[in-house]
Length: 465
Ligand code: NAD
Image (cartoon, rainbow, N blue to C red):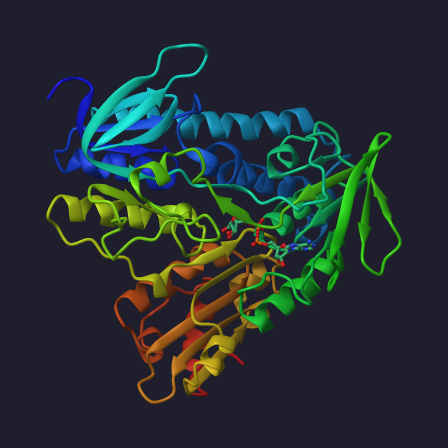
């Protein structure tokens, strides 16, 4: 095999692509990964999950230092915000993570190509390095498309990267906006809205639907809305944004049925669309669906032999960890092993304060599927550790099959919900019943006891409520 020829070429080095590349190298394949950005890690590591978590943690500390430590008997002097230092912390975190992938690629002897990859048929990929350099052709037995997604736009909202921007800009505002208008009450809108609200901005969230966090359990998202509203986020639900344009130093947002809203920043967070343009798909015979997604079979094979796709470019939730699981399952299949993703046990976490986490079916889904279920719910208010943390908002809710007691869904809003949900995911992977969790010893005093109590509650026998 020459240096331009591989067992596997992965196009895209986000969590789906880079994990697939590493796993394929572990399995003995000669692997190349094409990525157009200098840094590896994709949207998630560079301009998504990781930098937003760095800002969420930092802004939460600021907020606590400013308003939240007195009750613990901790007296703090005047608290000031050094936004440049906070942004630097975020940049450092991103750099450490993306550099980490460089190291993992070296360890796996994965060849990294910088440039735009395009399918050229018959196991070939054209690499365009840009900057006037000549394109070259790479060949592989198998090709994996892992090009992820980009921000969805609204037709009359003119994103200029200044007053009107996407999550990329909202991760790097150099001043705290006086008034930030967020379009869309999904994960991005609520997480970044929370960051800037904690740092002092007035935040107005405009949402088309009559609820926030579509897809999440309705009871949990209603509780989230109440808690976030108490923190100062202003919600205007059932509001369709007609247009937004820059004006002076700020912007004006026009919505149906409302007076125009003047603000200094607008964050457009109305979803994401697959990155499937300019990949040469049509030329090799792959036709994306009406939403730009690539259809695949259970082994992530497209309609063209030797070409596979995973992550945000195929149907399903657009989550980094879903893409990672698919990437591993796909290359394990290529190596003759058995890779499998249980789509019913993919957790979903929103990193607001408190966090919101879910796995499996919502109550609404169970009702519409006609599945009879039992429900156990336990509030953090009755959990000793949550009281010690002074974080008593929220609950754990477990939904189990009425006859078999098998866990069908778990929904949490509360402190460290994103970590707590892991227990529910493992339980569901093992086909556990609510009684299995209820009879497992949970260390005292921990937040995890709320999970045990909710499981006990499925049969009406919670102890502490
Ligand atoms: P989203 O799809 O989760 O939410 C977008 C919201 O915008 C929806 O509630 C929708 O009803 C609303 N909307 C659409 N058009 C509108 C209009 N004209 N006016 C007002 N509201 C409108 O999208 P997102 O928050 O942008 O996130 C994008 C993707 O990234 C999602 O798949 C999300 O799951 C993922 N993501 C996940 C996390 C996480 O897991 N913590 C964090 C960030 C992003």
